[in-house]
Length: 620
Ligand SMILES: Cc1ncc(C[n+]2csc(CCOP(=O)(O)OP(=O)(O)O)c2C)c(N)n1
Image (cartoon, rainbow, N blue to C red):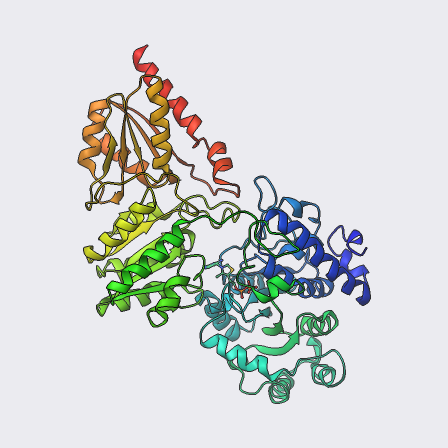
């Protein structure tokens, strides 16, 4: 067993090539065995086993800085760097993160989770290294999907002209989560089909061995090398033109070839990009055949490749289906995703209306301004982006959509706690940051039916609209009353306490009010529905009546619903008792909704007890 020899950083360097090949097989088995029980990004990780082994055989993850873009493919890196056993806890509450975390290990050079940041971070690290006269390598490992993100292009542009010594390893598996799209992908396809892989022997060796070591390098020589490689391997290269030395493509499952190229690159000055070709899901047939299905998975049966647990309807699916139905009647409806066709539930729409569906790549900023352009010409764009990825497009929301009052319907999927993806993916901030933008109407459904009604209403408003909903299924399937813009819903009238809730938290409020009835406490239940414009009047009237208020929201405590209710109380000089239940002003780690609700005192039991205490205080 080679895996038993891998206990700490750089143990990999003690193995010979044959042992490393054996290790790759053992790591794949270990990944399948472990991740099938925890869930995780299995296909991407199976694809980079040899790449990680080769990379960390040549470079030193303690001294050199290796940045994994998105970071979802870092499991072999974690195994090679002292976290083999901890992998069994990955993405679980209190377990290790599914992404690189500086706080977890000094070998995790930079926290990632959101796409296309690695090259910028690498540029910064390389510039710091040079200014501080230090000596180490900086490497960004980026997928062809992540390369479609604007930041990656901005960083390539900067590094190309700066001359910084940065190594970019392009892990090209032709896949984003779904099939990769766009012009850059077409460029890579042209390079791939040349199939003249660099080899550590024969012709490849001849070509690469012409690259001299840094000490000998003169501008003339570099030019000569560039043109040699260009002519011999890849004519007319985009990367070369913008200032990178391009090497490759190299077979990303051939450890020897990669080690050979990586060690040559180590000795080169300036920006270098190595194009590595890998297979997503490598070595596991179900994942090789359906890499999109195996991109991010829950528990699965390794033998059959079947997912464990029945998939119930979720908000994304309801959204996608409803949009397809609406689009059948309204020819102006179009749908946009930034590389998340499946995650956002838009597959059905894409199948029905391929010409009215746009997957723009991992390009949230572009996607939003693209939607603004569509709306400016009379179409009705629905754009669906995960809450945490909207953070990327905030200026586009403000400057391109809302300031021009364009009727873009911005659907915010994965709002609130998302679970295992953790800190980088929690949808904590969207209510706060959308709320402060003028012109926008923000709706938050408390169940599937309300989501559908909100989608219908959104089209009629002819202005920027946000509809935010959580990951997963509905928690209350109750019938709903008709919607009116800016009006909340009083689910039940009461006299002792006002419970003001939004979105999925409304089902908690309903259950709590049932419990309170047994204690003879009558709660007035307000389902906010519209975070903006907020129905101040109804809320104020209720608070004045009960003199006690509880607010429940599944976002950060700053700037969302709690803040709005605090303002109502302050502006009206109300002398009332109030309790606020929201997530604290900090980054929230991974864990299930229940686990995190409990930890952050947002669970039903805590809220119920606090209402009992509050109402007792009055009686004392
Ligand atoms: C800003 C942002 N948008 C969307 C995502 C969701 N996402 C995670 S991985 C991924 C695909 C990445 O493709 P690639 O870089 O080629 O890596 P692969 O999984 O194919 O190895 C996407 C879209 C993200 N992490 N960050």
